[in-house]
Image (cartoon, rainbow, N blue to C red; front, side, top):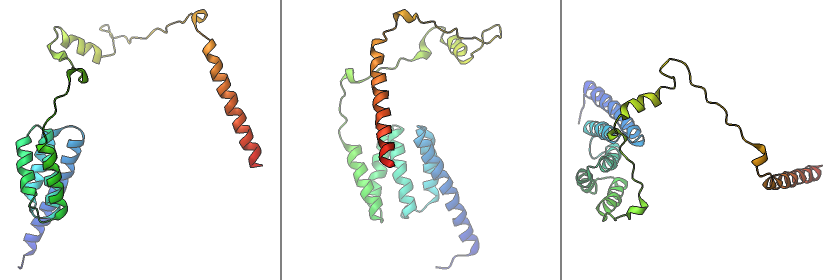
Amino acid sequence: MNTTKAEQNVSTESLEIAKVRYQSGKLAFENGKYREAVENLEKASALLSRNSRFGGEVEIWLVTAYEAAGRSEDAIALCQQLQRHPFPETSKQAKQLLYILKAPKLQRPSEWMTEIPDLGTLPDNEAKIRASGNPRKSSGQKTTAEPEFVDLSQVNTRDNRFIWVALMAIGLTLSYLAWLSF
């Protein structure tokens, strides 16, 4: 099959754009920006041949991005397509991912979970957020933290003996090692 130089330049240019989109998608995924990752990986995948090694790699990442973005059905459907990929490594990864995606979701006991409250629903929360984001007082002066004074007569110094014993042991060990090196 003969290809012209213009066709080769277009395919090379598409490959470069796909690589940039792929890297952007991976970076977005690693930073927890799953919708952005899906968008970039879909665009990269559209520019590549589905049966190429790189196309398969992009689509494997797209499967994980779909799942992270809450699009489990799309992830499973793409994984089923990738099981028939011509490169054995890609099809093997697709089979392993499909096994994980189709696994039953286990219920976690509520005591294992920590509930994070939605602070946006609190009354007068917007003013608090602005105040905490701005370290200056409303008068424009900087706030200075006053040092907290500790009553030294209330400090338990009995536990400090361990520190002195440990320092002496370290000193003796270092002296012994220095003596052995001569």
